[in-house]
Structures are given as structure tokens and as C-alpha cells.
Image 1: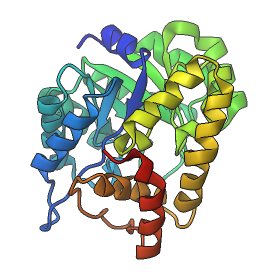
Image 2: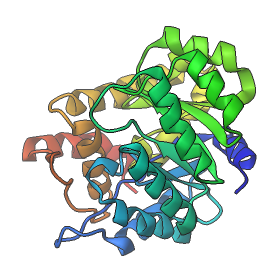
Image 3: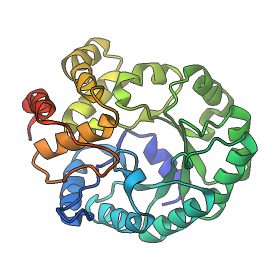
Image 4: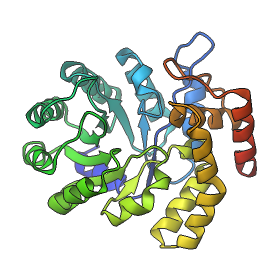
Length: 301
């Protein structure tokens, strides 16, 4: 897909990151993944992200990513597929090129590994990845990878295939600077954990859309919230926040890493045998699984 066509698609609706299922042997379970992605694709998501953060990118071997991308492409119909990409520059280039070869329509460049870096280093990192492929690239401002507006502007001048900016920092002041400076040069994607909790604030800051992790297991509700937000139906948004998202947040906040683990638990409760999370994450305990089951009971497929 041409990067500009992907940019248009990304801005046209809700986005999501399918979980990555693992079998009893710990390996990628492709049949379950294809069944789950096929189910998600029956709902109006604009783009799906394979091997992204909710897909446990951080625990995958780089060699596993191309097959995950291929499986997503095989089961998603006409829905564009963006692949996760990251680590240090040389590894990120290899992942990006392998994802492009596997059929990915774009990549999301997840923060580099471990160490902080100056703005020039971040510029060099992003530019080298962009230059290595022809598909669209989105950068992810989060943790140790915070691109400042001037750096982002330089990258947009140098990299025609840089099409998107995702934010997981929660720094509304910074992201408003970015949207004001870059205008429609980029597509803006909210990327806070459980993005619906912050969606109204990000919409006000000029963000185009956001990624919904809960779309993995309550896609209908996720779409309903997205539509209500875009329609300015604040009463319905608050009803859904109070009835679902705030109780979900309480479960998610019970342990580090549950922003992913609770999503995978929800997918299992919807009947998809996606297996456990990989270490260093841990799965929900029995009590927490009961809480999740009660929460999603009204939305069982």
C-alpha cells in the first residue's frame, strides 16, 4: 500500500492491536491468530497492527514477526496491516525490511531498547529505518523515545514515507505543539494504555484517532464508544466509561503489565485459545479472571 493511502486509511476510523496467541509449546499459534483476526476484521476497524505492543512485540523473536504479519494479511481481508518494529537501529532496519517483504502495509516504530538518546540520535534512528523501506512509517513517542516538534519536522522533510505520530507519553502540551506545528502532514494516533480513558483529551489536542486494546475482546463496544466520541455524545461516552472502562482500569491497575495481560484474558474469555502471556509478563490470577468474566458477560459473542 502506498504510504499516503495508508495514512488515509489510518485516519478513517478506530485502530487496534491483536494479541499474539501462543500454543502449549510456547510457539506462535497461527490458526488461533487467524481465527481471532478474522473475527476482528468483521468489525469496522480501519487498520490492525500485527506484533505490536498488545501483541507482545517485546517478547517476540524478530524472526517470528514475518509469519505473524503474513497470518494477519491472510485473515484480515481488505483491512491494512501495520507491523511492530523496534530495538536498536540495525535490528529495527532488519525487522522493517522483513515486515515489508512479508506484506506489511506499514510499520510502527516502537521506542528503541533501554537507553535514552539525544534528539540527533533519535533523528538518525528514525531516518535510517524510514530510508530502508518503501512502506509507511509511524513513530511512537513514549518512555525513552520522545521526539520534539523540531526533530519531527526535520524528519518529515527528510522522509516522505513518515506518515504518522503515535503518542503514549500523556504530555498533552507537547502533543498539541506537534499537531500545531505539523498540521495535516501526519496522521495522529492516541496510544496511551486503555486509550479510551484519554480519548476526549487527545481529540481536543488535534489527534485523528486512537488504538483500542479492548477491541480485541469487546469490538462492538469499542466501536460504539469511538462513534459516540466522534459524534460528541458525551453522555453515552460517560455511560460506557463508568460501566466498562473504569472497572476495567481497576483490574488493569492491579499489577504491572496487566495492560496487556488483561486484554489477553478477555480474548480467552471470548473463546479464543490464545494461551498465556510470555515472560516477563504474568497472567491474571483466578480472582481477577472472575472479575474480567463478570465485566464482559454482557458482551459475550
